[in-house]
Length: 220
Image (tube, rainbow, N blue to C red):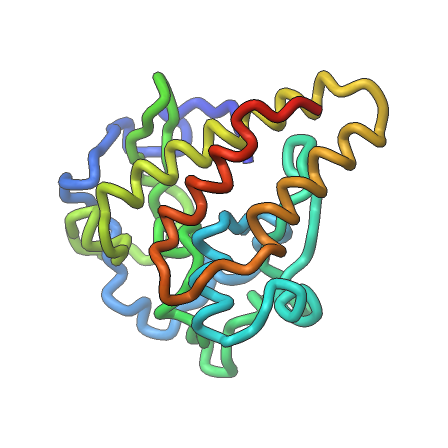
């Protein structure tokens, strides 16, 4: 989701790389699940999130939509997000003890928290959200360790490329003439990157870049 923010108001005023140390480690959260509640439709999922979750739960994207996900418009494009339930709007994957039932395959948004990403010049750096996590005594941890993701350099490249890929199509949606063209653009992204299954034992990045390449010259 694209946001125009003043980093001085929401962060410690610093920008970090994946090799920097930052006070983000909640040391297991000790039963706190505040960041997993009341998030509305903000936990938007990228193709890697879907690849991980479908593989972990052995369910298709369509099956996830039945119970765990929703579709909402994000900056002009329809994208999937995690579903929140109940009066407290708890994440659908929280168990009764407030622990994540898919922690091994948790989305990138969840791995990142309480960090955020600041994009510029077709790249990004991390920032620490100063007011989001209520735990007062977080420990320092290297960001790449905190994100707990294999092939970290390749992961960061994908995050960058996917961000700017979507940004281009969101711009196309804003400039589209008529709702039918916007719908066509959204449905193409959903079908190509989410509904169409990935080979679970094959390299995700090879697969997703092949799909991105197929649309480089697409016109809507």
